[in-house]
Length: 285
Ligand SMILES: [Mg+2]
Image (tube, rainbow, N blue to C red; front, side, top):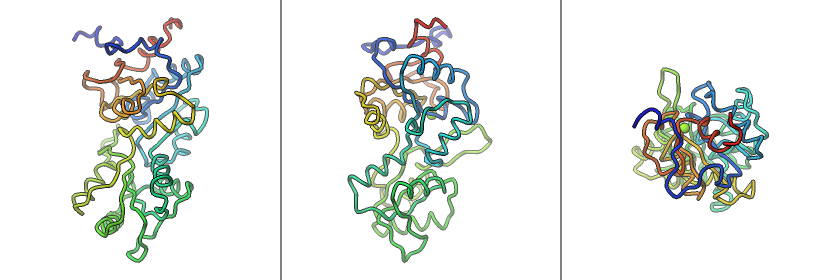
C-alpha cells in the first residue's frame, strides 16, 4: 500500500460516506485515540470543535477504571478539552452498577480490588465495601484496574472467590498504554492471575468489547444505534463494542491498536483530522 492511499479515508463497501450517515453522536476511546500519555493529538481539539459547531454530541468511553468519572472530567478539562458535562464520560463503573442493581439486586456488599477513586465511586453509587477480613463475607468480588494492588488484598479476593463468592471484572484489557518506561498491568491480567490461582472463571467481564457502555449513551441521548459512531484504535475492544451495539464504527491508526489495516469498521483512516474533513466536507478546512 502506498503512503497516499494509506493517508486517505477508507469506507467499507456498503457503508455510506460519513457526511451522509446521519451521525448524531460520536463516542471516542481515549488512550491512543484522543491522546497518548498526557499529550493530546493535534487533530483532537479541531475535531471536537467541528462536532460542536455542527450540533453533533460527543463524548468518551474508556475501559480504564483506575479513575472516577469526576476525575476524568477534571483531567480532560485540564488538557483543554471543552467537555460540556460529566454525562459525556462513560466508564465500566456505570455498567457494573447497572447490572448489579437490575440483575443481581442482592449483591450490595462488595470486596473491591481497585483504586481509591474506584472504591469511592462504587460507594457513591450506593454500594458498601467489606473489610479486608475473613470474617466480613462480601456478596460479590469486583476486580478493576487496581494501581494500588497489594498482595494481601489480591489473596483476600482469591479467598472469597475460592469460597464461592460471585466475581465480576470491570474490563478485559491486560495492559494500559503508557509513554513512560514501565508496563501497566491492567484489570484483565489481574483477573487472569486470580483465575489461574483459584481455578474459577470470572462470572462476567464488563467494558469494551461489551456494548453496555455505548447503550448507556444511547439511552441518555435517545439515539438509535445507527446515529452513534464509535471511534477508537483497538479492533477487538473499540470496534467490536460498536459493532455489537449496532453503531457505526471508525478505526483510526494512532495508538497501540493502529498497526494493522485490517478492520471490520465502517471507516478507517490515520487520525481524527482525516475523518473530520470527510464528515464535514463543506468546511473545506
Ligand atoms: Mg485505545
